[in-house]
Length: 293
Image 1 (cartoon, helix red, strand yellow):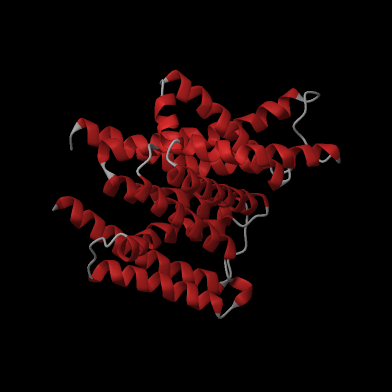
Image 2: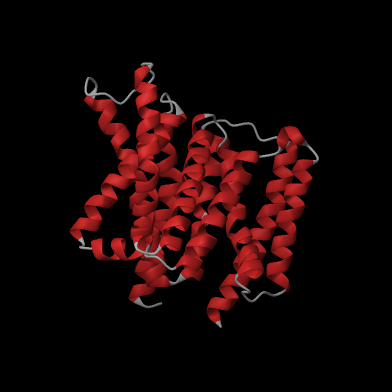
């Protein structure tokens, strides 16, 4: 293993553990704040921090180049809706003790992305990939027969994130530039909602409490740091190894949810997770063989 690959794997692992552990612990620590206000801060401060980095790295020409393309601009607006929906659903899961359901979504999202790639991008496939996809479908159908156990949170997380990745892959816009434009589009809506919250006195972010305000400001960093680490991992080690390491994220969420926060795991969800874990094992084995070849 060369140095770049090793550093890429370390970077990808750090990103996955951040999403799976640090991010969970952070948003749990601010779970007294309404999820709506949390998504406002995540959106606004992500946009603010990216405004800073775009300026530092002199990428304004890249931003303007994208904005001159009406089609790309419109698509990024749609992507902004998808990513904010994904963020809100995940935050809602953390705040309302549905980490297990959220982890379900992040387990199936890479396999769902493979399915989308086959359907919409005409990517190659084999029997193992098809089997992994089939097992995911079986797992979801199994839960649908028991409506009380259906992890709708996980399904929204998986579908929004997979769709977002599919669109962004076809769009071919730099990750930081695209995320900046997306979050910038969503920021005015976030500010309006925050104004309505503060008008009724339902906000926690306030100059009168700088400690809580600073803690909420960190929501932006909680988005950008793991994203940077993950993209660095992809750059140095490739999508395959980084994709395999990504499964540390839902594993951390699942373990924290069940063993640390004491979330209830009924027999139907456990069976569905076993099916998903088999699908993930098949997917990872196929991914590792592709890397070797």
